[in-house]
Length: 473
Ligand code: FAD
Ligand code: MLT
Ligand code: ZN
Image (spheres, rainbow, N blue to C red):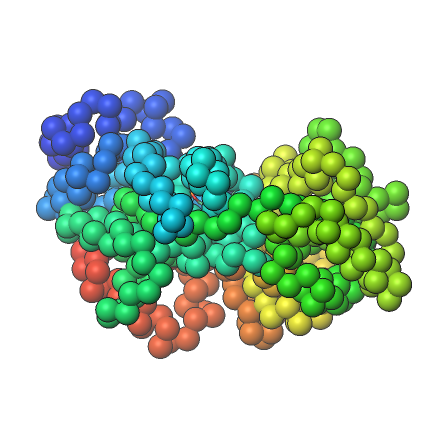
């Protein structure tokens, strides 16, 4: 894009969003041009920060008319490079962070309507303000946005009970690639009037339009929680424990997170004020949480009895039942500290994979063999949302390694892990999406029919390929 064209574009954008809505200074732009992991770096002529849907529509219309590609960005916490522009300097970054109003809360209809740029933690606060609960919960909730959660179909730690973001969205408002607005902010649990249009945009990673508004489902506020940390000899035993907990606790089982000894040790080494929860380190650990709107004592008894049974049957050999909010928070700090600990300890070759729960243990045993055969010095950091069959099967590299030098090894390792995942009928991206990280692998693991259908949808919705080019497809 020539200097003249850039200046003309900036002048027109300035007329649409005003000075508060534009970042042209390189320093101010810097945080928008790299991702949370520091893995991707890009360039842009301008970061546009529209204040509302009308301004967003006007910006997208102008970019459509001038054939200017748009990279939409929310909290920039994504793990697949989906929100980082390429190095061409021709892609406008459209940040939703100024669109941060809570539009409506309806505790009778159990819906919360927010701007896409609302931070997830603020959506939690809005729900709590009317004695309701919005259950999507992930380590980045203090900075990720609801629009980004929708665009990546985020998972997190409560999927086991409440589902992914896809299950929590009732309506969307979207600015389409030509600048028109789709007003789909309905708060209906039943609406059988044609194709599920909102379903197209959930998980679309900015490639089909800019999500500007979301209607979310609200739930009863859990008043009782019971949390425990357990140690087990094998992943097999944790999977059996998961079954036991589901049978005994039903809907009250809200979280079942797994950490291997290596992933726990990483957090203990890298994150301050953390302590090992069990006297004896266990090869496999689970953080288990029950919640309900009933009495806490009864819930604790249920957890205690269930885990007592797991010890009698040899599924677990050590259990720690949290006896205070502080202890519960300390346990969650161990689980949620992993992302940060990995970044501090080095570079991780990450695999965010989903498998049938019944295959997890045999997959992990086979994967370890295959990975070590391919990379004898690999330090496997395996953790994740066991309740959803989602493992973050990562391989940690030394701190001084750099992603470029690792490219070949990463490619090999991805091939080993993802082929095994496919053999087990799994997915190469459980919750982090495709972005630019998995784009090229997608066509290996998706069928030609699936690829063709997705490409035809993309062509129909964004014929000029201006929405987040180079991502996902
Ligand atoms: P961004 O990173 O800004 O963007 C992500 C993608 O969505 C990009 O492709 C972007 O173009 C698109 N996008 C963003 N906003 C919009 C919009 N309004 N309209 C259209 N497209 C848009 N993810 C999980 O699923 N589960 C976890 O447990 C989890 N834990 C995490 C823990 C940490 C510490 C961190 C740093 C990240 C974690 N993530 C997790 C990843 C990340 O938080 C999620 O993917 C989140 O949904 C991204 O939201 P965001 O607002 O940061 O989006
Ligand atoms: C998590 O579950 O901690 C997240 O998905 C982030 C990560 O994989 O690092
Ligand atoms: Zn995760």
